[in-house]
Image: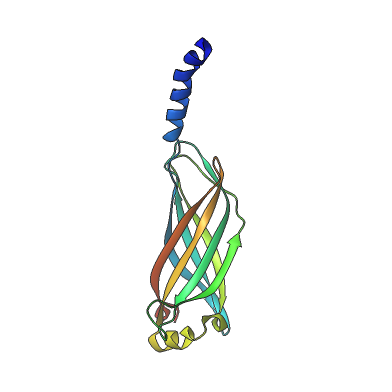
Amino acid sequence: MNKLLRFAPFAALVLGGCSHAFREPEVNLVKVTPNGIGLRGGSVAVQLEVHNPNSFGLRTERINYNFEVLDNSKSDTSWVSVSKGVIDKSLEVGGGDRTIIEIPIDFRYDDFGAAARSIMDRGSFRYRVSGDVQLREPLKRLIPFRKTDTFNLSIIR
């Protein structure tokens, strides 16, 4: 019993310190830029910024993403998934650092469905990019990201 009492303050110190040791990293979508537009589809580059507020480094394992466009022909809440995938990319983010990750996303116009007509009529479209960055070290966890914005086709003419 006496040994347990000597161990209790040490255990409380270690466990109390662990609860504040890890702060959730932030993932923000910085911008989406066109890589190329062709007759059957195109490609965009999505830039994510990962900010590590911790004093120790983090390592990613993979990035899951979903690129959607708003189908205005139905309603304001009808999203069409155009491209989704997984990027297996190991990346280190140092303690207190920020790192930009670029994700190339390819798409085909056929995948836009009825939204394609609305896009051609308006010359712009609402898009949503969402997903998560999977941390591998020091703790396995998912950090979600999501951004909705408008893409104007006139910038590629």
